[in-house]
Image (cartoon, rainbow, N blue to C red):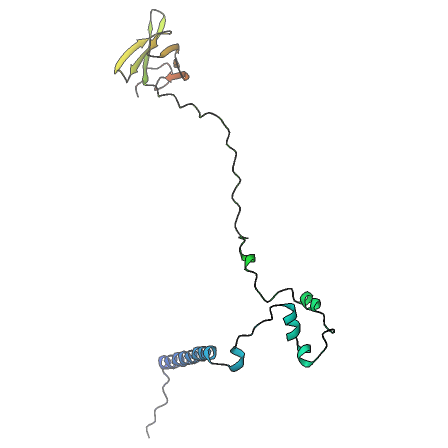
Length: 191
C-alpha cells in the first residue's frame, strides 16, 4: 500500500485559526447585543424614588414589615443619605473649570509718544579744508543738489553744528543727528 504521511500546511492552519477567532468574536458580540436588548421582566421597570423624607419613611422595609415608626427617626434617614431624590440642576449653572481672565492693567492718561523725526535726506560725501576751515560736502536728495557747508550754515530747518574728521553734527527739530563718512573716519573712500 501506498500511504502518504499527513501533510500539515501552515497557511491552512492559520486560515482555520483566524476563522475560529472571527466566529467566536461574532458570537460574543451578538450575545452582548442580545443581552442588552433582551427583556428582563420586572427589573427593567423604572423604580421611583421617594421624593420626601416622609415618603422614604413610608417606603422603608420596617414600615412594610409592620415595624414601628419610632424605631427609626426621619432625621436619621436624612443624616445617613445626604442626597435627596431630586437632582438640583442649579448646581450645574456655575462654570467651575474656567480660568479667570487676566486683570486689566489700568491705562495711564499719558500723551501719545511724539512721532519719530523724519529721516535725514542728507548724505555726507566728503570733507574739505578751505583756507583752514573744514567744510562738509553734502548731497540733499530732496532737492537733488550737492552742497558745501560750514559750521553755522543752514539747510532748510537744519543747522550745521559741528564738523570734524568723524562726521558732521546737524541740529533739527528732533535734536542733534550725526552723519558719518562711509569707509572710515577722515578718509574719502568710496562705498
